[in-house]
Image (cartoon, rainbow, N blue to C red; front, side, top):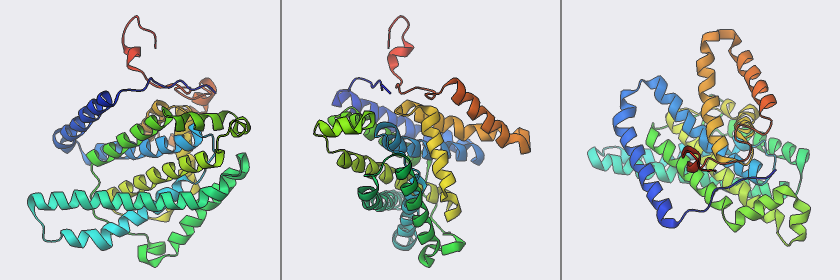
Length: 333
């Protein structure tokens, strides 16, 4: 599976793109999003969260070649940790604050809350990844599936975060700007990693682990690092979801949620960041369009997935990335 990756950008050019992206997000968040109805805003927020999940899993599944079915477990761990930090620690600190001070405190505490959720998920990814990533194929899939279920059941029996009742009263701090800023950071980090020597080693492990090991690459180390980074962003995505819906329940983090994220990666094209972004957006919007079909909605949705995989077996992007040169007439990508 050959992956076509874009040419590395210079640091100045990357910073310029980051500045333009942030400015666009702030303008959209202040001027456009408040004009939308809550339903459309919710779809946009879910698209952003799913993009983060899809791109972070793509690092593990698409670039490292490790079939993990435990992404929802990391999402749950990060989401509950972040929500608990906001509810028990940070929210009481902003009570009584008004105006600009309130905004600054909320954004600062929200960033700390998301970071704590991501770190907790990353630590879990490290503890789980070291023993399980020595496995391969089906064995690794079953191990990660078991890990995700263990996390879910432990949370289900922890009264501090609501237990079987679910965890409510989470402050509503997630906004459009926050969601797409995190998605942008995730894309930037994964893209730069893949363009680095780390990424080349990771792709070598994916293509032939035995050959990579014979060349002196510590395959377990690279796989664990990718696993930890993927878990970190899954935890942050869980925090975003909790602070948007203001309620978390373990039923939202079953293995079906992990399968849904895997579908984003496979349908978009394993090893393609662009494909993951497109698939996450399309598969978030598609069920909403199909609501007119009522009870046949999921049948049509599943049929479309089967047709798309039959016609595009390597996914929508097939391991390639979008390049601006595609938009210029007469220029080859």
